[in-house]
Image 1 (tube, rainbow, N blue to C red):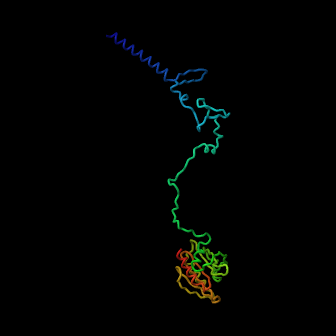
Image 2 (cartoon, rainbow, N blue to C red):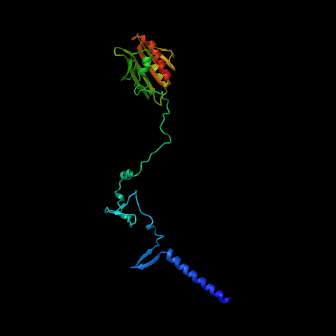
Image 3 (cartoon, rainbow, N blue to C red):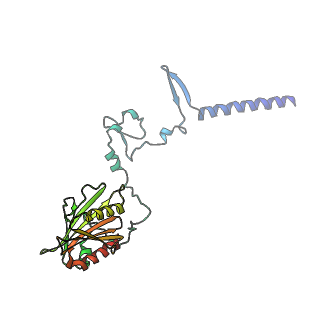
Length: 263
């Protein structure tokens, strides 16, 4: 019984040693030392270089000499001409990419009936002038001399900008319109009061405070020009001055109303 047990143990040891050698030879790399160089040889089943073929941008690599390099050959990356590939070439080789914002097309969120004011005539438009009764009239911007109505000096007023318009036809002059706007450091009510005080300082001028138009208004009556009316009106953040023949009073009244509606 004892001899049988010893024989069984010896047989098991022999089988274990033989199986270990087979596994080492098949799965572990063999190591050899030749010319002081370490050479490692992997089994074919573990050598990835024999399984995977190298390919960049869908084509074979090219070394610095211009020779084609197949996927199975050893490639020295330091010799590749990556520095000679331009960004344009890369983008040309890349597939087209479409970017989408999530909607098929953009839609204008503003009212389609919205009409922008013409640049240069944001305070007074020909449509307003013509709708007021000056059917064939047009407007032109005119340089001013620092005065309104040729009698009230305003060129010294701080933080105030004025634009002067002429309403006319080809044949005649219908009216002149002065538009004054203030900056952030000046109150429009204060400017209106300054204009009224300066208008009343004229020797042959009388001020008629009516407040019939806009937020507040007054007429300046000049005895030297009895056929001409001078109307100053505060409309919102702006002050308008109208100089016109008294025969056009109805049209100017309509024009003031149209401007007041929009501001």
